[in-house]
Length: 307
Image 1 (tube, rainbow, N blue to C red):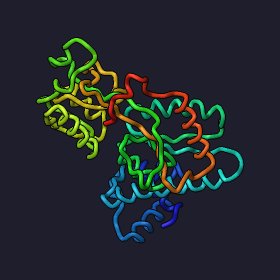
Image 2: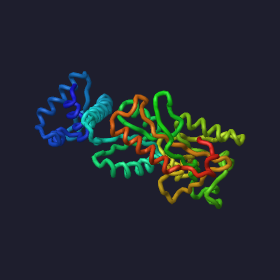
Image 3: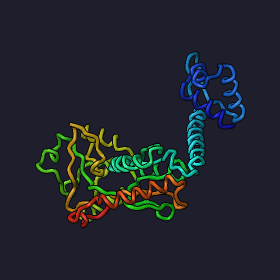
Image 4: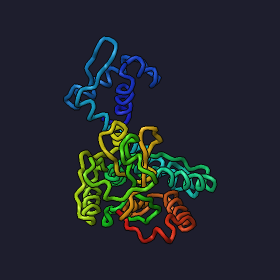
């Protein structure tokens, strides 16, 4: 099983058709079919269910596709890193992002960095903090913006921003119709809540409520904010997420949670082994300078604790 065969397989899996895949690969159909059969024989599994017009992946095929994509992506990244060992700062920066303020921070950094280093390209990937960190550990990302807390034994990093935690309310709910853009935490007691699924985050929210002598009624946990928004729009519950983690919707209203207020903190992290290239090191230095020039909290907000 070599890289060429994996590329053949992923193309067939994507096209679901041998003829179209052969056209994409600029080869004839019989040799491609032969390569796929040889791969199945080598692995001892069936990768496709062959229909008259369309191929479908088997469970083994789905697993191989996931692994093959990771292998090919890591191979491409390694080849680019070898090219970057020259003096010129160029190549592709792989950056993992959580939802919330992270995409906006990354956009600001890239906008400035690309003016200094126009030969650098960017590959952004979004997911939960756990997913993003896992991608970083596998070598599929150079850097990541995650929410605290994070594994400080394996990762190195520094704070890059923060924002208040908010309640996302169904627009027709009584709480949404109350005046003002803030809501005391006690008003959420007894309400069905939708919160991020990260274990440390759930525990932090529980401790937050315990400070006012209450227990949150967590009905649902979500790794993807879009799912939480969909449930909130339908009146299933109230979502608790960082302020900028929201998609404009006429069916919800967003209020900052106060008394006590909490803030979500974001950090830029990388593996403790250090930056993998000069390009990555230069980007880290750029972000450090940008962060010093753009503090995220004013003096009145510094008293708020990080959740």
